[in-house]
Amino acid sequence: MSYLPQRIVCLTTETVEVLYALGEQDRIVGISGYTTRPAIARKEKPKVSAFTSAKIDKILELKPDLVLGFSNLQADIAASLIKAGIEVHVFNQRSVAEILRMIATVGALVGKTDEASKLIVELQLQIEKARASGRHLPRKPKVYFEEWDAPMMCSIRWAAELVEIAGGEDCFPELSQFHSARERTVTPEQVLARMPDIIIGSWCGKKFQPEQVTARAGWFAMPAVQNGFVVEIKSADILQPGPSVITHGLKQLQTIFEQWAALENKANNLG
Image 1 (cartoon, helix red, strand yellow):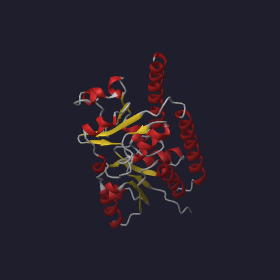
Image 2 (spheres, helix red, strand yellow):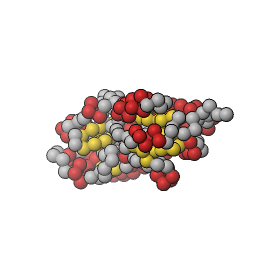
Image 3 (cartoon, helix red, strand yellow):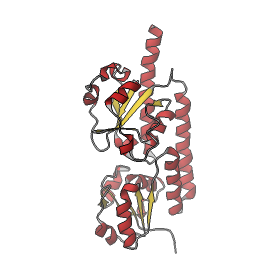
Image 4 (cartoon, helix red, strand yellow):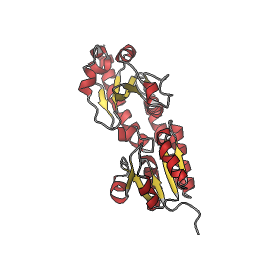
């Protein structure tokens, strides 16, 4: 008889991604409607929640022996399930190190510690390769990462760390440490004052509109706007704190930085 959880509901996409990567997808009996990775999960698993809301009755009907959540924003959902007698584990990973720790914890919960450790080593190797590659950039590009446009919100901690790993310099390192998006709001004037070389847009849940960004008052003076480095990384690739922020988000940052470096080197040679 196994004492490990057999019927798991995942309220966000990150733990779904990890369980599939560990080959333990058969344990999943319910997922969030916002699940993006792997794509097959959306076809195979019933959807029982959004992000800040869930169908509690539907979850209970699935008879889960473990529910996995993410962040303080799911505290009310967790409380309702706990009151109903369900075991709940809510992660709150906000940094790259915490993302790797989440993977280790999920692995331990389903008896796949060795497999989780192997996955972590693979991700760490990608991180170190990206860091080494970033050292060859002509200089550290100043990067403004915009998570939302109204109000404007700058990078959450793991996004700022990924910028640094890829060889860049986050424009607002003093703000990225805050959990609350409200505490990471910035004004157009503040961003203009930092004069970013690159603007990364990743509007959580909606398509980035670069033409709206470049039209902001005074922003044409920015190197990012003048050189055409106002680009999108889809939120599913960098704002969902699971393995994909490294396998997809970090790789895209590297590509953008390499394109910027090529232009920078060309300008230096002409100079």
